[in-house]
Length: 244
Image 1 (tube, one colour):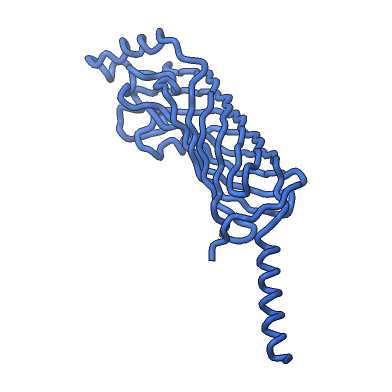
Image 2 (cartoon, one colour; image 1 turned 90 degrees about the vertical axis):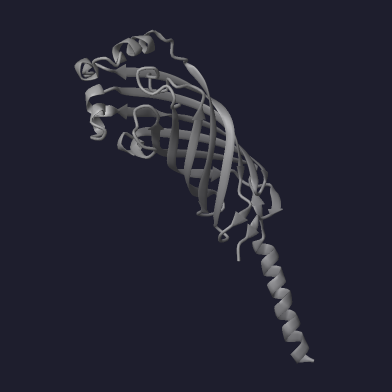
């Protein structure tokens, strides 16, 4: 009889432990803070990764409402700066002669859906997110080192005058999409790392368009690490699927 009881007891304990590990008290609300960098990509970057030479700081605050363990609605406030500088690039040679530069301050508010369908371990979970928002921008151009003699016959001065006379929008729509990784330190605290792309509808994020490359739109990226605090949970849900 004992030979049958031991396997049965072992199976019962295994099922109980799996059920316990697959549930947890989920908080409805979470508060987060993050630090990172904004990376610009546009008229003043010769390649898609060139913006890493001119990073700008970023600070973010988040408030999340957990809809399900795998789905949350997250509001964000982000503050930071975008930078660009032709003189940082040796190739092509004309960039050092054009020598355009800018600094753009950004205050951004977005609303995102965050989806984390699987867990790598019981504490580690990847996620993706996307949403929409608005950004308040303040652009400061610097073309004081522009060398007009190098561009004789190209009318860059005339096109620069057009850019200067063009009213730059103060508020622009942004569409953020990104990926992240979150690690639970305990029931209340987590750390996360994110990489996000921001699509914009303006070519004046850097203050230049006609005098630079009007065929290339401006966009930017945000890379950050953060700390998340989960308020005390009051509802028990099944966890997302744990990868084998």
